[in-house]
Image 1 (cartoon, one colour):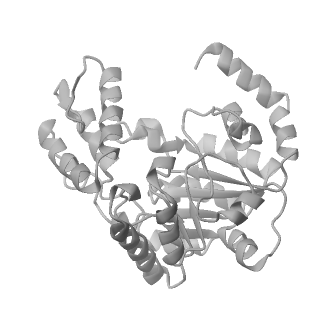
Image 2 (image 1 turned 30 degrees about the vertical axis):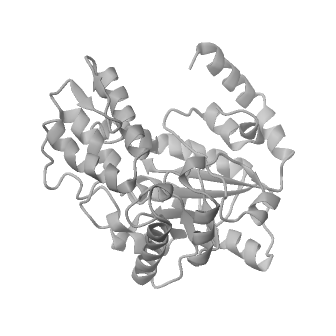
Image 3 (image 1 turned 60 degrees about the vertical axis):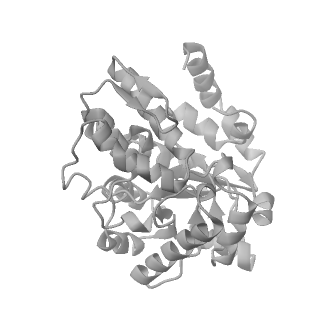
Length: 338
């Protein structure tokens, strides 16, 4: 980002323009989306774009939320949708995707400090498992390889000479893999360690995700849980029947472990290309009351009421400063992407 862009962001944030815009849009829902809360330096061989913030940055963001928003629970939202119970003005919902262990280690204590509810969308096939998400497996292979080239999943070759070029190649590899059918993507993922001459230590990914005991502890302290599929396929890359099975089996597994209904779903990847009206209808038929995208928000309550299976969420990244953060959460975000 240029110095001019940073300066404009800072002035917009500090001048109060974002808060003024927020006041003009009180009947709205602002849904924050996090993945990981951890230190970049502790995750050199993991997929760093999924680290949404380090713990101090996350706490600063929660302090901002406490000052300017009213944090609601998923239950509050569901009761508003189904039972017409009122929501406060400037309602905000805090969500996490995937089910990483650092949600428990770093985010959970901060959420408790502010007495904030939150929702974690679990990819049930990875919970209490040593199975790596494909983006973390790819990151590990690229970080440790001695190779200087790779064939991308679109069958083009990419070479590198510097660490920066290698990181760019990693992002291109993952982006190309996302465009494949789930079956083809898994073939490329399985072949990648050998292609890059890397062996995966047996216990490398054993403590990356939550276990059910940690989930039970969080559930008893104001954290709710939703479904995020079993295997994290992009649902437009599988058949409708497979999409339904991914939703319903994830829902059943979490309900069995927690002994309570699971009422909400989050689409993997969540962009416009990753779900459609048929898939949203499957979410409804699977027994969910709400489903969340990663189309950026905030959203008017009228839009949420009309389309509870395509609710917007604001994707947060470790590259976002507090100036970024305040603008992303404001109605200005819907006028121009930042």
